[in-house]
Image (cartoon, rainbow, N blue to C red):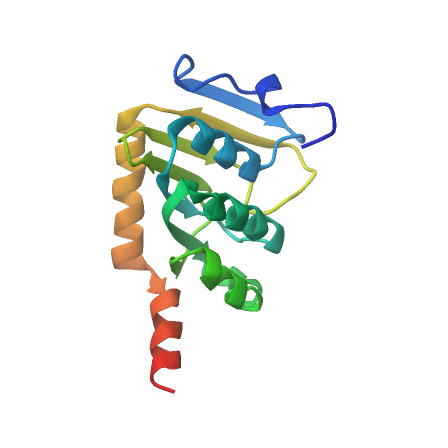
Length: 173
């Protein structure tokens, strides 16, 4: 985030603001994920994106290391495979389950161990950029459940489980 600006300049507490949005070049999606986890506590995360960057992975690593993440599932696009493979060693240290699919969506679902749910629908890939990006953040349970159901279908029926494929290759080498 830019110096002198806080996430509170764009988003208000989830408990009193269950539906929010922004359009800015100031916030990064990792800022929003961390902000949500600070409010709901330890959580499981489902993410879809076209691609992911080392910088986002680094942020997610430190967020996970702080004990706020139970598990992460990630779906990336087949077309970003070369970039994904360059990050593979780091990716496997941060994210337990990675899948490839025909995917251009950018959705982050967060479910706390207490049962709180948050959905983030964003234009930003899991990268860092200085472009204008938009997002909707909601605690609506129906939005969460709809996206979770669609994401589970994407993972189970329309994706290649990259993490399992690489694990099998390593185990059988």
